[in-house]
Image 1 (cartoon, rainbow, N blue to C red):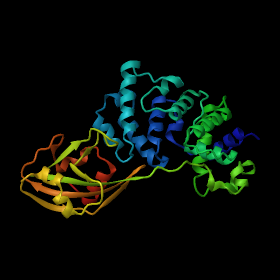
Image 2 (image 1 turned 90 degrees about the vertical axis):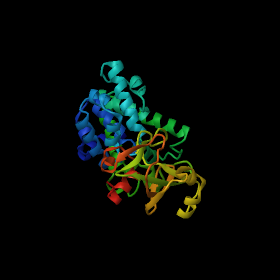
Image 3 (image 1 turned 180 degrees about the horizontal axis):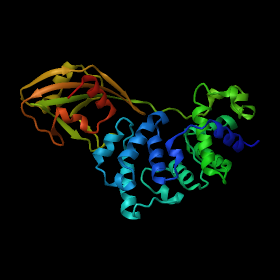
Image 4 (image 1 turned 180 degrees about the vertical axis):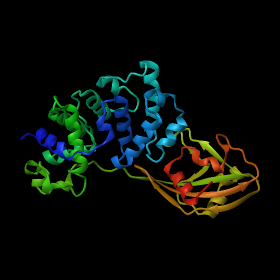
Length: 347
């Protein structure tokens, strides 16, 4: 029995029922694929349902305010995905009369769509023979064929893409792509792979050499950067200063003013710093509280954050506006700020 046939037979019995598998609507499939990038299915499912409920057509998404899109996305991280999704929806409505492109090249041209997502949409919506290569596929192929080339290098990416394309069942492209991805997600898992009841184990290189945990091979990990941030909740009457970030990974999200230091800094040293003196410049203020330290981990950085509650009669800052405390939860914010708001029951 061929590699393809074993995967397809396994999939017919073991596949999960997921809503985006019951449609060939390219808009819904596109939504699901963008949401599921760097997101587990269990977490992404609720976001997918929220999005199709709020934006049942691409016209609804295109006409939505960015703040609403980001608020629905809140908690998923990688907010550029949401911004690109919104941008591409507006582009499709404005320049294609709302008709989603139906070929790989044009789908790949959408902002925020890379080779994997273009292949997924092409095959799932239009059954075109383009192989998907995500983390699950890489894990299955590397273990089965014993590929020890790091998958996150240029030669590795090329090798896995070419092999996946060579293996695809051209007559059942959508089903085959779903089968190998699903196999990696629930059978050939990163840890504790279910090798003892695996239909591929007899011919699996990694299993037969007792090296399952050694694959896939990754190049040297990038060193994580540490950041030390003090958020200032500057309260005036029943409102606080709150602003929309204009750059960085949290662009488009709202946050409190902040001071950032190159190392962990004691509150007493923060108060003596030049940037504190410049900000509060002879103003009368009262420090209401200083929170515990919050640790927030991102892919290549760790953020150590403290929140300062500060009361002051009047302070104007560029790019920040006064927002009533009771309305803060209506704004899209990062998971870090949301964690503080929920923990402190801030309103």
